[in-house]
Length: 200
Length: 200
DNA sequence: GAGAGTTGTCAACGCTTGTTGACTTTCAAA
DNA sequence: TTTGAAAGTCAACAAGCGTTGACAACTCTC
Image (tube, rainbow over all chains, first blue to last red; front, side, top):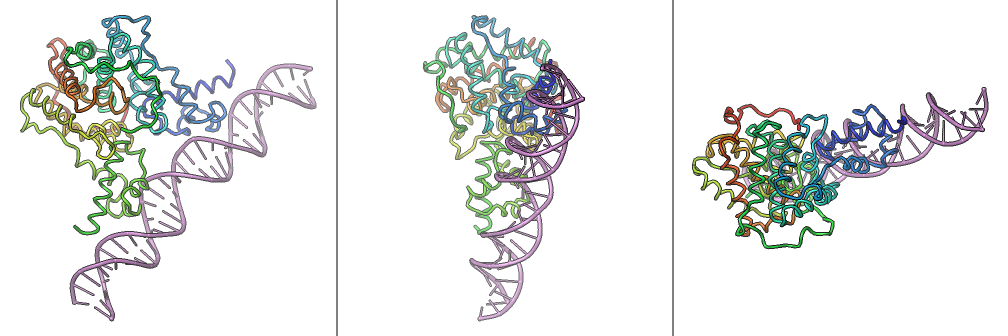
C-alpha cells in the first residue's frame, strides 16, 4: 500500500470514529488529523473538503439487503444480530450512532436522511409490506439506540446480552404486528424525491 | 411589564424556538437576538452567557407527574395526548425535539440527560414499576419522534391523527408488556449521580 | 547523480463565534 | 430642570474554524 493511501485510510478511519460518535459539526478537521497523526492540510488534498471527508465515511454504513432478507422473522433476526454485534466503544462507531448524531445536522442532515431511506427504509418497506409499519419498525429500532446512546438510560439491558435482544425483538414485533385499524392509510411507497430543507 | 422584562422574554422565546428545533451548537446568539429584534450584547447582560440563555429555556420542558399519574393506562393516555398536541411548526418547539437535538451535544448534553432523567425517567420507573420497561417505554416514545423529526419518514402517520395515536399506543404497550423472561435483571432504580462525560 | 513527481509541512487567509467594555439614549424620581 | 440609574448601542477582542498556496523533503526513474 502506498504511503499516500496509508494516510488517506488513517484520516478516513479517524473521521468515521469521530463523525459517527459525536456528529459532523462537533468535530473539527484539526482534531481528526491530530488523531490520525497527520497534518490538517492533507484533508483538503485528499478529500477536497470536510464534507468530502465525511461523505467518504458513509460507505461503511451497512443496510438491509431485501434480496437476501425476504420475510419478517429473518429481518428481525438480522437487525437484532446487527445491534448485538455493533461496537459500543468509541473506537468503532455504530451505524445507528451515525444516524442519530447527524440526521438533523444543517449541513449533512439531508444526505444522511437520503442514505437511510435508500439503505434501510426502502428495503424495510419492501419486506414488511407497507410503509406505515416499516416506519414504526425504524422508530422502534432507533428508539432503543436513542435511549442507549443519546440518553445513556441505565434501564436498557447490556447490549449483546440475551435480554437486550429480547427487548429489541419485543418492540420490533409490536411495530410489524399493528392491527389493521391502527395502520395508516396506504401511501405511495417512500417518496423518490430528495429531502430539501430541515424544518423540524 | 417593564421594558427589560419584555426583551428578556423575547430573547427567551426565540432562544427556545431555535435551540429546541435545531440544537444548541447549531444556533448562534446573533441569530437569536436578530429574531428577537434586540442587540446581541443583551444576551450577556440578561443571561450571562449562551449557556445561561439555553438553561433559561429548560423550564418549559414538561414532564410526568407521578403523583397525578399512577397507573399505566393513564400514563399512556397522557403521553399520547402530549404528543398529539405538541406543536409541529418551528414556531413552538416540542419537548422531544429538545431531547433529540441536544442530548448528545458536548456542551449541554449532560444537563439535558439529567433533566430528562428527573422529569421523565424517574417518574416513569415509579409508575411502570421497573427501570427496564421504563427505559423501553422511553425508547418507544422517542423512537417515534426520531422517525418523525430527525428522519422525516413519510410512513409515520400525520401527527394528531387517530392513527398516529394508535401507533404510539401500540409501541408503548409493547414496551410495558414485556414478558418476564425478557425483562432485565433488577437494577437500583435510576442512578442518583449526575452523568459526567459523553462517551457514546 | 540529476531531475521530476509525489508527499508532507507551515504559515497565513477570511470568516464566524461568544464575550466584553465604553459609550449613548431613555426615562422616572428628586 | 436636573440627576442618576436603567436600557440599549456599537466596535472590538481573542479564539476557533475550514481552506489555501508557497515551500521543503522525500522517492523513484532516467
